[in-house]
Image (cartoon, rainbow, N blue to C red; front, side, top):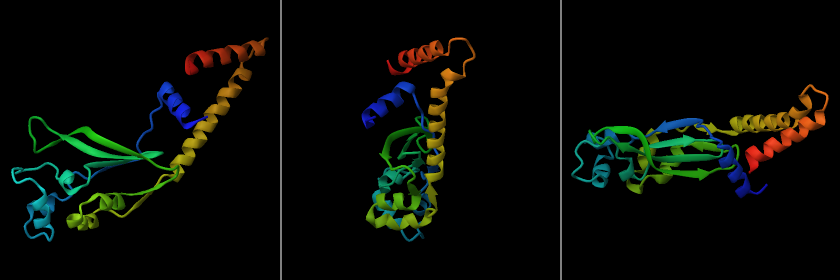
Length: 183
């Protein structure tokens, strides 16, 4: 099965891949922005527009994102939408999402992702982010096992019917599968 037909089948079956982990980094750099004694304060204030008095997040000006998520085969990042009634607050609505496809069982480090995105003059902010590794290999293996178990169960289902005509059950199952999932 080609990658394109696999994607089409996923869309047809409406498969949803859930998050392993969510990382909210929207407050990155805010302490340094508000504290003139912080070593990077002047570098950060130079990047943030002067008309912004109480920012809810400054990550976009630093080159990073407000949030990151890890999935089975992708990692995503983006920004939170500021509240329309109070711009100094963020909503949970995600905007400008970007997802990057990964190989199965990849290892994600939030520190490395942020460090690669931060602008050079504020790159030291990455040192305040966890350096923990998040490995997806165990979860990917379990996902593959679940898919395999489902496929095997689906193919053995027609022979599990009690009745006098198991062949009829097999053809009825195949017909229903083709009509419901593939057409």
